[in-house]
Image (spheres, rainbow, N blue to C red):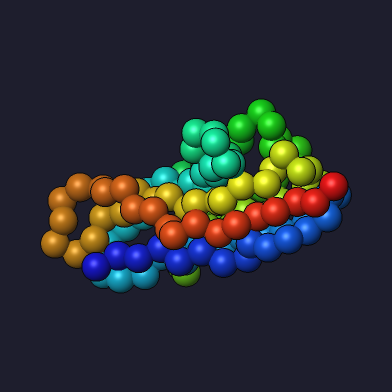
Amino acid sequence: QVQLVESGGGLVQAGGSLRLSCAASGSIVSINAMNWYRQAPGAQRELVAAITRGGSRNYADSVKGRFTISRDNAKNTVYLQMNSLKPEDTAVYYCNAKIRYVGSFSYLDYWGQGTQVTVSS
């Protein structure tokens, strides 16, 4: 009923930039928080950035000042602008959202399929 589709990953040199997008589709009534996570090989999945429906943002310390999360509520889409990328940013990036769909009475967790970001040194 609800799907999150990510795009924008790829290979970039250190110091470069990428912009990730994640669009939610389906019978959506409302979307609460929208988040970006990442998981590097052999590591646990970690929260990178979060944004509430009202636009309040939080970032992991490792990306503060370099990454910017934003959302377009009319398009049910969240973005992650990543600047000054470092090799340690290499990971699979996942979109996550709390969504209430038609016929439900609570917000449920949905995940995108993940998009690979590789930063070469």
